[in-house]
Length: 450
Image (cartoon, rainbow, N blue to C red; front, top):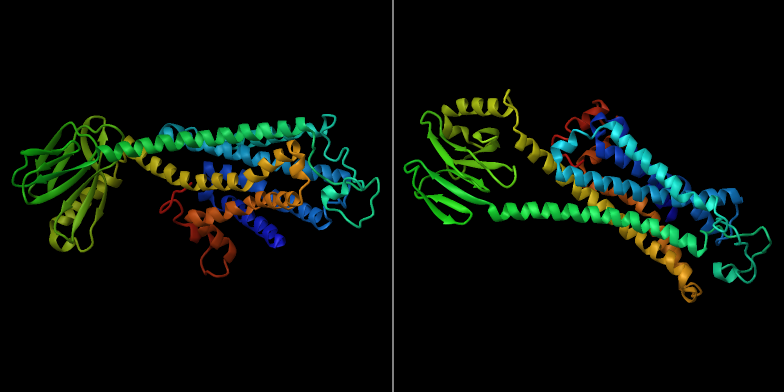
């Protein structure tokens, strides 16, 4: 079972790394940060988990050299610290992307991502290096197994000598406090940033829900408006030409174009630069959707359009002119307004936040029990001497290791881009007659999770 877990960890994280390295479309800023996280998880699968399995099979009597023991224990702490630092960087990146999507997007480049990743790994090396230099913090110092201490490690009927030792973390109280302190600080930073992100996003969306309402325009009576509620206005008539979902509108001007259709201009929109959608209700089966955006106090221009099924039958011949005009306005030289770009960027970052939040939650759930037990082992000797403590310690340790295989599964479940890349990499071009890059042709067109 543990061997399968190790293989899944290696294969899953190799796929994540290859997906970003092979496919150019996947080389986004956040994915570069995820590569650093996947690298630490891959090293856990290649180094830490196999040696931990060997240690478990030998009943915690270390069968290898002391230098390998020191490298194993130090690398274990190093990779755990690197994972937390990478998650902290990702959380700060998510926060900046949500708060200021357009401004921050201009500063996000490959050099910045590389610098952040390098900083995370350098800090990880610095944080985990004291056991190599501080007296009394040695990995295997004073841990030679004797007959008195053999019961602590569940060792029975084994020849003991001076060179027989258990490869464990330093048990000195200062080291445990030091290591637990920096882990707590990093985890607190990460969780506090996510708390701020959720507070900002929930505040935005609650304001949108409170201020969102409807306005119905009427072809026969275009100027008579009756107030329906604090967030809704309605034109009094039975024939509904268009429906506007709005937030806060200071002035509406209406122009009747008989040769085309009824057009609505919104001069001022407040609160947040989100879409204003206008529905041209031709019948119960046919409708057209046009999106309007604020453009520095000027009249609005459509930025996107979606035609309803079978809509052409009733719109002949004027639908051809409408289609050409809408296509020009949405994809022509006018391009998108600043608020439209902010809307698109915000929605992309909001989708990314969901996946990253699941990744962070998985890390906390997998590693928190081990961190708690790590401190209990120092301060509560009576608990350590119980028969269930070694079992719980081993279980929580491997629960933490299992987080390394969890992240690729999360990417596969919640990110269509990674899912397509994984499928394409598994096929190796043998299952398709087309080139391997064809399977990711539409990456970031239908999905923009990262």
